[in-house]
Length: 460
Image 1 (cartoon, one colour):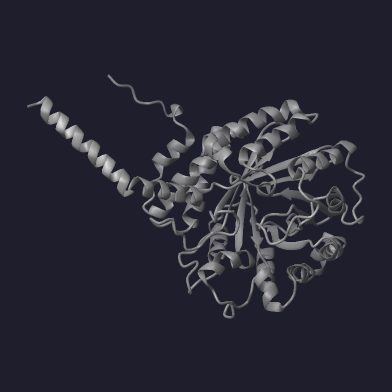
Image 2: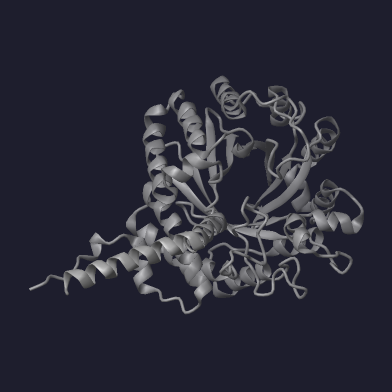
């Protein structure tokens, strides 16, 4: 008599997969290719079974259907998201908890059914539809849309009629026009954030990206604007654009009450020196960092040096979109502006295995190594399970950002991961092509003929 399998023997991803039947082939594609990635990260980050089920169900029901069409049989995808190196409309991040457990975030661009066509060349509508869906269904506690309406009105272009789209421009211009959404799977509850690329609005007005952002912030209701105390930061960004060639690329904010929401301004420049680092961390001397310990300041310099390595003081321009190290500056009502570092490893590491080596080097030399190294072990297990050692050693494609932020006594580190769904799909297609090459087909047919000949002789 056969016993029924114990549900506890199955992983949460397997159980959720058995419960949800996707009738849409695109949804099935994205669930199979990316849902398992999220599941592995949740497991190794130390989430309970209950937390894993909750997050996987939310992901399957409310995010997967928003990831748009899957690639066709040639690997072609009409709309490639600007948020990841290969155009996959999703990234996953791991915040390195100081007590040994990670916090996982999902970040994605909602893709409309007509994105990349003449009807919707810049994928302008789906993010708005998804956020209103969350609001109408009450799916996120504390979701508020006051700032959503304010900032999208001022940061996104009014008209796209003057933009001439081509296949080549589709991906290159997307970062100037689009939006994407993140959902922090925080232990205290999820937080939804909106990220906006203000570039096309800047083109429309004939001003810089920074000027668009400045105008949007200064047009807030007076009480909200004054509570942010944002002018020292805006002054610094204006000066840094001249001194360091720092460019403003992304504007972000939490979809919560204006009294609790955080605004983030993402910048990047070609410089790699510690002088550049410290100038940004102090807002050019405007920000007092004496509240941070000497150990924390040493940590951020070590993190910078470990990942930057022996790169030239100024990187050549015109390279990869994510080449230069950058900063994002956070402002919140009643709090001073706080700078955070983010670095694109693809500019400084030969492969993802080297990124792991550098992370381990950093954590092994910290005073809380006893808590961070076990987390490092789990992180490596998760990535080996998701990508495999061959891919991790082949190139730097999984890690597209590593980030750190000063806390009073130490750093808060975050690593951002690209599922590489589109790249891996193209590799599968290329392997399939090689398998159907004439020489291989003839060899297979020859073997089949020999087998049939042998079989007929043996049974004559």
